[in-house]
Each structure stands twice: as structure tokens, then as C-alpha cells.
Amino acid sequence: MRFKKMHGAGNDYVYVDARHEDRDWPAMAAAISDRHKGIGSDGLIILLPSDRADVRMQMFNADGSEGEMCGNGIRCFVRFALDTKALQLTDQTVRVETGAGVLSVTPLWADGVMTRASVSMGPPRLAPAEIPLALEGQGPIIDHLMEVAGQKIPITAVSMGNPHAVAFIESDVADYPLRDIGPMVESHALFPNKVNFEIVNVLSRDRLKVRVWERGSGLTQACGTGACAVVVAARLKGLVEEVVTIDLPGGSLSIQWPGSGDVIMEGPVAEVFDGDWLE
Image (cartoon, rainbow, N blue to C red; front, side):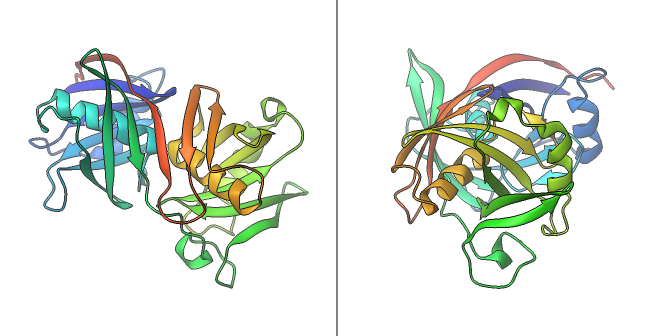
């Protein structure tokens, strides 16, 4: 099976053209993502035909569970679709069907190579029932004290098609025990579909420093939907302006949200290698 490995700001995925493949994709994702016995990645993304958009993206986390969307993954996905000729070469907007709906991706080019992309990520969902979050009310839920491991973490809840819990902290995010706390937040009873967890330092009104524990994948170098959720949460709290740079361990993303409507994300696209998966 032919594959390509790509990453966006260090958030790495294996891509497969599945238009003519029929496999156990959850099991394949877990095997491929293994960083010791597989290719090594945060998950698997497959390309499928769509009757609603130009192409369809289906993503699986490193543990084999299916995710609704991946912000870094969708940028690389469009380049993969171009490389496999599933899409014609274009500098126009590409419509991609995802588990979170149809999203628009605009390739950005340098010397004839797609090196970045801008993605219209849709509007954030803030009502508890839409996240989903096991609380009553219409939302937004800001600084709700969630008890984890004997401590109370103030989380702001946002869905970008997938659920996020965002916590702003004073101490350096680099020192936060995310490997220990992340799994407990992910599986907390407050989130019936589990959750992605972001911890945030406010560096200025146009720059945030973020680390992420991703649902189904664990610690990752970056999370595109997470970066969007962080900016939405920061805007709800009045901490940042409309355009914000998000510094993640694997690189930086630019997020724009005026306070209503669609969140716009821009970030890098990089190919790592391609090859054949032998079973």
C-alpha cells in the first residue's frame, strides 16, 4: 500500500489514497502510527471521493479511533490530493468533506510548491450540547472549575467540530505535567465523547504559547483545531486581539477570529517521505 508521510507544524500524519482500497482502517491506523514498529505518526488520514465536495478526508487517531477533523492534517491533505491527481493543480479554494462538515482550504504557493494553506474552519460551537459537555445551559462555558487529580482546573469549552478544553495558566506551559494530567482530562466524565486539552500562556495580545494533549493521540507537536479553540477561548475572555500567533512545540500557526463567524487558520505544509507499507 502506497503512503506519504506529511506534517503541519510537527503534527504528523500518514496519508493514503483510499479511493481503490478497502481495509480495516482503524487497525491500520494503530499499526502505522506506532513509532517503534510502524511508520510513526499522530494518526492516519485517507483520501476518499465525495458527493458533497471536491474530496473527502477521513482521519483516524494513533489509537485507531476516528476523529472528526484535524486542522493541521487538512492542509497537508489538500497537497496530498493534488500530488495524487485527485485534484487538479489550483490556487483556488478546495472544498473538503470532513467529519465536521465541508471546509474550505486555499493553497498558498512558493516557487510552484504548496508550502502553506489557509483554512476556513467554520464557526466555533459554544453550547454545551454541541461540544458535547455534560453541563446545562446555552454557553459559552468559561473558566468552569473541573476537578482532576485533586486540583481544580479552570477550563473554557469550545468545539471546532471536535471538543476542546482550554486552560490558561500562569506557570510556563513547558513545565506543566501534561503527560500525567492530559489523559485524565481527556477521559473526564464532563466530556461524553472525550476531549482535547490545551494549556496556554498569554505572551501578549497577539501571541500565545500552547501545548496540547490530543484525544486518541496523546502529546502532539501541534493541533490546528486546538489552536483555533484557544483563540476563541482567549477572545471570549478578552485576552487577545483578532489575529493571534500560536506558538506550539512543532511550530507556529496564525489564527484569526473577529468574535463571530468563521475561524481562519493559516499554517505550513511539509512532506517528510513516501513509501510502501508491507503487510
